[in-house]
Image (cartoon, rainbow, N blue to C red):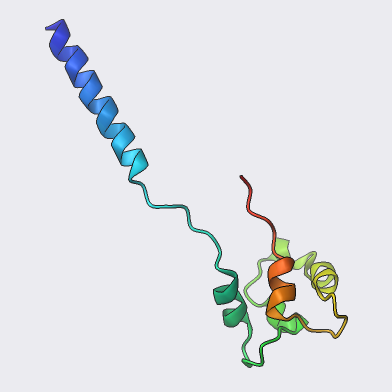
Length: 92
């Protein structure tokens, strides 16, 4: 009886590990998709209002500051490269 219990434990453990390994990969933000979604007039740049589109209250608190910091050209709009460079880096 004890051997059967050990085998059952091993089968359940292996099955659990297999389901963990087969889990869907974590969802990561696609910068191009996010940029295109925000670029409502499709001009290839984001204004501050477009940049704020879809942000929650917590994100909106520092949006003006982040936008200004990301706007390295100082033209008052973000190119895709500026937008991508200003995105938070993924945590490892």
